[in-house]
Length: 183
Figure 1 (tube, rainbow, N blue to C red):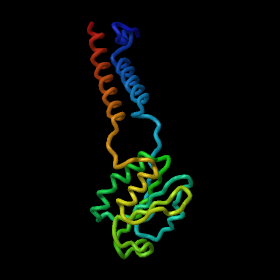
Figure 2: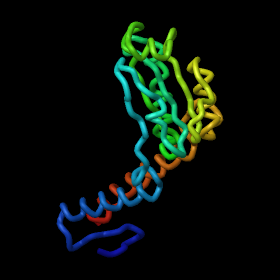
Figure 3: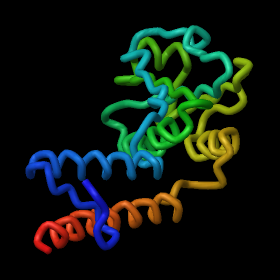
Figure 4: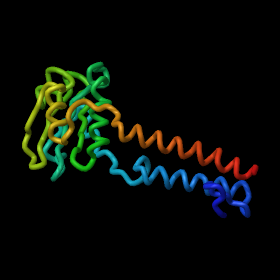
């Protein structure tokens, strides 16, 4: 392996070894840019499917906890689900999401919490006190504020730029190595 005209050339290895080197370097570049690598898994869990539930049993010390009451048949619930999931993914260190499938208006959990409309959200602070409840838009606004977001998500320019840099590096690497092999 040596550098020729700014391109890494692996003369002694076979095609499989060269491909392994390329994939290793692509993975390394991707990890360095933060696109792949250790990330916290979202703290997202369904805690009830219509049965009675004690919310206090599902609070997480040191984290904001969002309880989402929903039903599979609720179209508005399906519309906000990606935003709730995105918040959980982006703020796994400070936000836990617990979902409660109401199933129908006569379910035990709907009666227990007197749920009259869906989606119904409740937000608890890290100390375990309820700070917001009810309308999804209002509560999601509180969640964004609590975790430090300014508004609904849009891809950041930094993440788009990182993808562009990785894409350019991959193209350069693949074509650069081929040219060096031919030359």
